[in-house]
Length: 126
Image 1 (cartoon, rainbow, N blue to C red):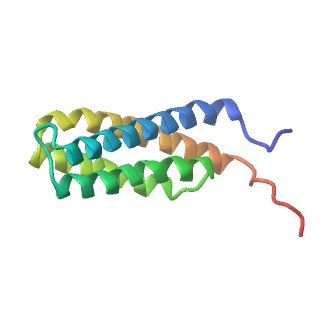
Image 2 (tube, rainbow, N blue to C red):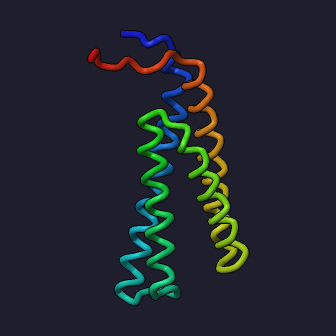
């Protein structure tokens, strides 16, 4: 069944968004576990809170993308700015995450363009 939009145009971007969101959730989950175990250079409650916030943001990005919600875009911007701040103030190696966030942002905008060009999702009759 066709809903009036080109799935080829949006599915590749959507896969990229979901893959990068999964990587982000996994990364922050590992960082939280390492902090709880006292392993590595960065431990403590600040890392746990940061991991919960940014890991949760990645999870919401994937959820909002699945639901074709434009709310994913501000969350991607939030993650990008947070990664930039972590790169400047915590560890320059984090700038690798900034690159991934830029790819995530581009894929998010591509999904949004495809959604705007598409017909609305069908809804159940009352």
